[in-house]
Length: 594
Image (cartoon, helix red, strand yellow):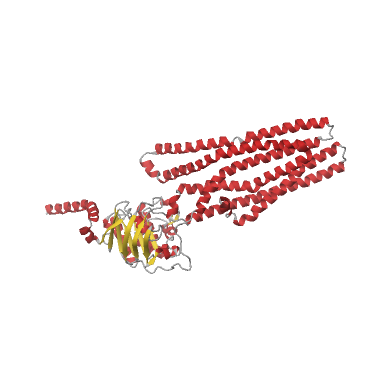
């Protein structure tokens, strides 16, 4: 099944893949025929052949040598084309599969593991594919032809070649049985090592601010040492191949030279002659070099088989969130109304632990809705069900009075824009990043969105303006600037629903208020959902939803919740008591001054 899955990535390189073994076959036939003609030439020279006869043999040998060279060169070219193309297709197929994953699917694989699979694992499989299409064909063909020619020339003496095969087979079986488990373990440790590297690089500022470089280096050294030990152990097992092969080669050489010389001398060249000894030695090299090549292939396949299984695991992963059939899929989102009907949700990794329980909520189109609650209460999980980043475990979610599962997935997500707390910008200009929201947006539309998100001020301070280059990960701009650009990017989509998942946490309260004011004026008919930690961000919302422990405990406006919700009142009081106290002191100071 794994081979069948991976073979689907050959596609347009199938002709080169088929041509390679055919060309190799031609190369092997000529290469194995040359020693036979050389042996015949030696015997003819010994028998007193004239120059014309020798020249005839020389011409034949020259043609065969050139033919073998041409076949070999062509095989190398087609092999390289097929292997590199196969590797490219495999990467594209994996990348396409990952892009189609739901969040549940992505949660199954760590980022570092996916990177390892798309780099190291595909390289291993590509190298194995190259060896299989060329060397794996050349080695058995050469061994069979060399065996046939050796038996034809040397008769019973050629049985020495058959005697060494069981020794080599036993060695290969020993290598496979011991090395395979080690390689499986190594790749899992590779994933953990890459994960450690990724975590360390992404958190470099934290590491340096806490002066934890030595700790991180020691932690990485432990992981790296574990990989080194397992690789050393596996390489020591694989190292048995070469000496065993060399031993068999020298045994065959000694036997051919000793026994062959004895037969030549004892029969005066009648049963076995000098040319046959020469050809037998050549064939012994061919046979044993073929066996050595096969052992190398075996080692490569041993390494690549685990990589192939890991690649197939990604390719076999099916997204649990898919669009309905095109004929029945809803292609238009009528409005921005949202309704949760008896919704419960649990993550696939922990299906028995509901993150959301019995959610019933109706949001009318154009409303501004605040969602507030403690960390881990399920706020982000709730809004991620709207664009189907996850599907509800139980119950149904409706957008525009249509079940979200009935929409074409791309249509639904184009109409539900999300601005996350952890904003992501890509390497490129500011304008390029903003056009993710609308590829056809004009510069005027981009400027308008930036004005509403309060990003225009800092952009105009840059000499390049909207052509200012953002570095990888947006490291050359501040967190607040990054959030404002991401808000502008979402506004450019002109969505039916826009969700702010604590996405103004890095801006000051004045800017936050200006952004919310801009939202009301720019997209009045768009439903706006604001997840916030501070009550000031949701005080003017049409409706505020208080979530605690995955359940909706209160719904109302700011004044109603201050009177009826203990949780909301506690959050509001804790955030505003210091401000009220300062205001009272300032008022008292003014009175005393008068």
